[in-house]
Image (tube, rainbow, N blue to C red):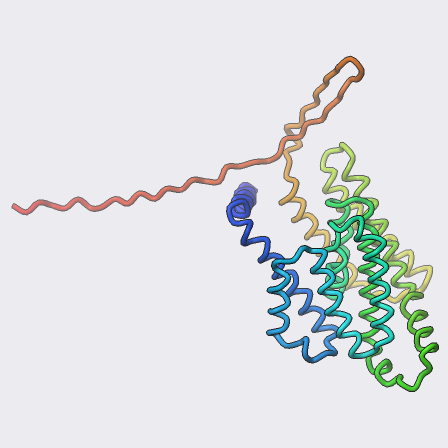
Length: 313
């Protein structure tokens, strides 16, 4: 345990010294991962699958804020969708414009959730998003997470029906839009996932803000169970077919990732909790003080000892 705490402190010090380099590098890795995941799952536009294009766009994202990176990723996905169906690309673009106007004009800080949610869906670990959002963000993070779920199911629809959509040129344009809206926005699995993620965020947020010991750990566990409960209930009510083993494995990995995040963000020693009381002219204050676990990094000094030379007689 102490070794992990020392490693955490070393990372913190390294980030403090080299933050100007680490932050752009994180953005590059994030953008590169998102573009690669999109290419692997909806890579219908051959030009965008070129590794040089992916690397170049990722390099550009190094100097951009996360809100703009989300827009670049959205444009990247729209280009792939347009290669299959212009109608779905138009509907997706309209949906994104509404999201940007109604949400990101007021709360741009959570924009990273909009691109991480569909990306982690393709990796089968989207259940970590509600846990991290509940631990680090407010209740309003339900909006970008829910929009990310919608985007994932749009991408999934394009992926699974690419052949049909490409060969549907003879279908009337009105009927085509009607079919797309019905198949995408009436998807019961999507609605269940949106509800599960919203309940998960709410559960984590409520428990995280309590004063109980190990609140963050309990919040992660309860948030995971809440998501599973909603998903299983939706499966029972709407007969949604979800593979059980990938679901359980994905939630287990998501919970483990959330625990790792908690360790690096909030490591406290509940055994040394103190309860303090203050008062002024108007109020009594009861304070619960929980100290952070801090360790000092070992200061290793290497001293070179040279062998003593023997004098010649």
